Length: 182
Image 1 (cartoon, rainbow, N blue to C red):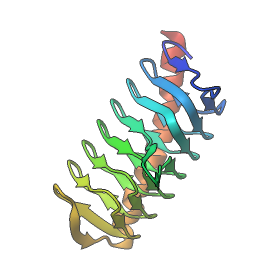
Image 2 (image 1 turned 180 degrees about the vertical axis):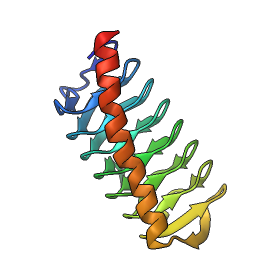
Image 3 (image 1 turned 30 degrees about the vertical axis):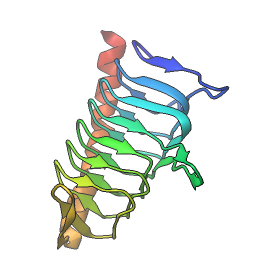
Image 4 (image 1 turned 90 degrees about the horizontal axis):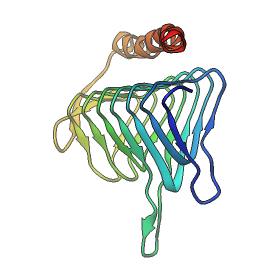
């Protein structure tokens, strides 16, 4: 992987499936696992130094996004960051100690905080901040700072959001070629 920083930490080294695309400028630290067909776009940082970060298959994390995990405090256990299959995370998001289930959609410039869950087909709108412990149920769209329920998405809207992940999987293959030729 050209111009990608991979840093082992506390005996854990990032694991990247051979079919994943990791763009130049990315930084992967510690207990990171990236599944088949997933893509990490330019200048993302995934720092799994105090807990794990697990990314499923065909998910994409767009340019400039930071993903971290939570170590816990006092008697509270920490939260790993778990990202399922076919998840779309927009540019410049901050993802921290949360769970994004299969087919979750996270808009650009968002913040998802510790203990949050976005269920399949759930959407956090661009620029929103999901405060600790909140859950976006399947088919719900939340927005604002702090985020609140805005509407229920139709099946067609959920399907359209899902097509974004498919589009990024295809686009990643073109970038694999461009980066290897560059």
